[in-house]
Length: 595
Image (cartoon, rainbow, N blue to C red; front, side, top):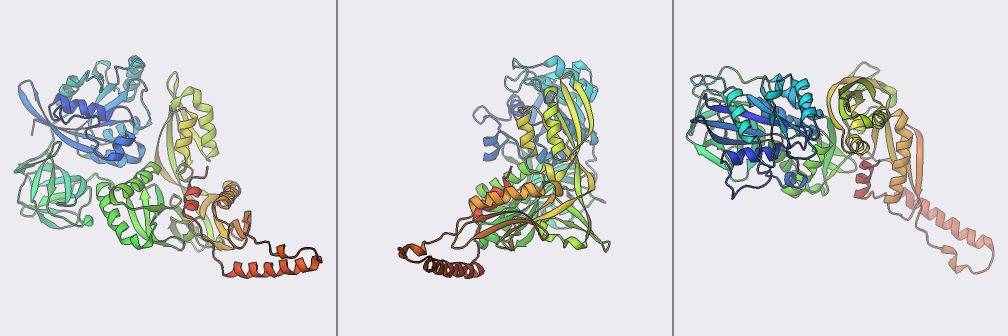
């Protein structure tokens, strides 16, 4: 056990975690030159295309140091704020962390929040300054920032380059010398923490775990603590580039277990595995439940595919524990699910994965957040969807979720960023200079305003320099109203939204204009209205397709033409009563993309 080291790599997005992991694997000989490729651990097509890590990836390496053999378990983690749950799970399975900072960009928002996650779990932090081979590297400035952030000595910071392999041996020796070996009792009853799981269509569910106490052997009867289900360990082993079976695994080891589990509900990330013969007293603590930030309805394009969508969701949730879902129905879209995501990128990735991995084409409704509604009778309930809101006369007040947002940027962009945050109803809490040209701004913002397009706008006005990180702080009372979209007086529930009073009219006007372009002309006039309660705040009309009924009246009296036009008008009116408006698919999507 004293020769095992478990560590993860944490950093802001794009600071070179996966590239550095590639070099570590090559240096330790875990990956042969034949198998070597860029981002070797990122095995999803999406990850390779976008150049981002979406899943944490665990791998075991062997390394010889001062004549002794060491086993190093590495977990490479994502850097984007939407995948921070993956990071927190990886940190729970480690004793040390490599904190990587890009020498050309310095410390950014996600660096700080991931660092705090690691410090909360008492991990040993090894600071590494990456991308030292670039001409634009600023080693002295970035070192100052790291020293100020974690209070280490200058000589403790390792200068490295994931591209050229400089400093990799130094990183490996630091891991062995500084990261403590796992603490635990090999003689105690088995206690292993499940930190991830994947679905294999041939073998069932594969759970990844870290053993905290005790040992596990192949063929042993094991029990999952929280679900109470018992299984036989058909195969256990360690995670190399491919899964390698082993006879037994001991305290401190990170490995996988296959026990023929077929249903997704039986494996919960954060659960504890123990043995049936000698069970442990209590489960492993310190694993928080995921809190989804953004909710959206996901519906199959063809309503007959509902069961297939449910199956796809179950499989996805295994692989991505931060996805939550429950069934819901909509008048316009039929049966589907209300899903909780950690952010908009997360939502986009899930949509893309449903399409690629399960061949499911889905419609996603407007993303929204959870509001707390208080009625005049003193009742309180959560509303996820505008259609669940009671009538205006029964509502006392509504509270919306607030976040504390940390934005780190160059000082040139303070003005436009402040303007953006104030437009989004933000309040400036703090402004501090990290260096002469780097500022950290702290804002209180309503989560509903950030959900839409905040991140994209922030990136464009700061020319890509600003980094953004947030966490929820609680709820605050706010003047919110339900904006209904009516087509010929009928409300379309999939298009209605909860919005702040100040923005309701302009938003309503934009939607009406957009729908006018997208709804095809019919045989009768279609009135598109945006209404707050009974008050209509915006309107546009899709004109009817008309036939020139007066064409046969050449010359003659005007009253003959009038008579024909009146007759046509009556027909149109009757048609309007029985006709229903078909809203095309792209209309729902376009409303989501409204700027």
